[in-house]
Length: 153
Image 1 (cartoon, helix red, strand yellow):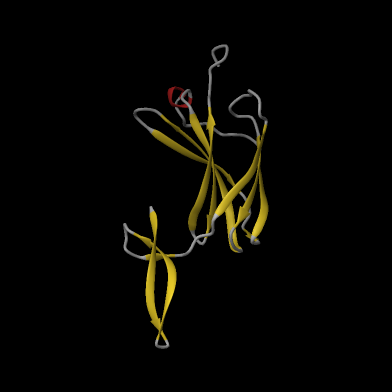
Image 2 (cartoon, helix red, strand yellow; image 1 turned 180 degrees about the vertical axis):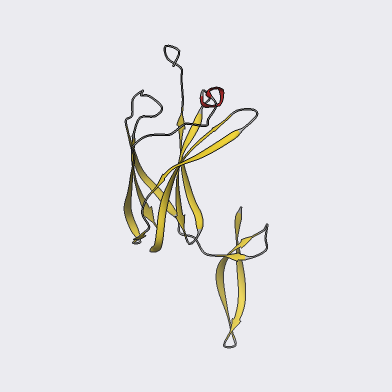
């Protein structure tokens, strides 16, 4: 976790107040990551469908500052008492986002669940859209996924 702290530093004989982010785990000062406010989420299909069905996700969001070379990663997380599996489903292309309102869009042709045991897949999971900027995860938009067996499948 990153916590905020106020730091005074001396510059040209004057004291200025500067806000930096301090990572309490490694003791380094981190970049001041942008603030992100999610405005809307549209995911298709929105009704019940096979687990391998395509996903079309759009997220409209507002940024507190310009962000250079950022991208989104879409992941599926499923877990059970014995294991946790996170599969990367896809990534958007790297782009620059201006201060203010923007939109991301990602289309996944097929959700590949090979390698995930049926017992693990049959639990609730998360579809996670992570915004990556300045080499860091800025925000994770998490959507609950319920996988059910129908007619033995």
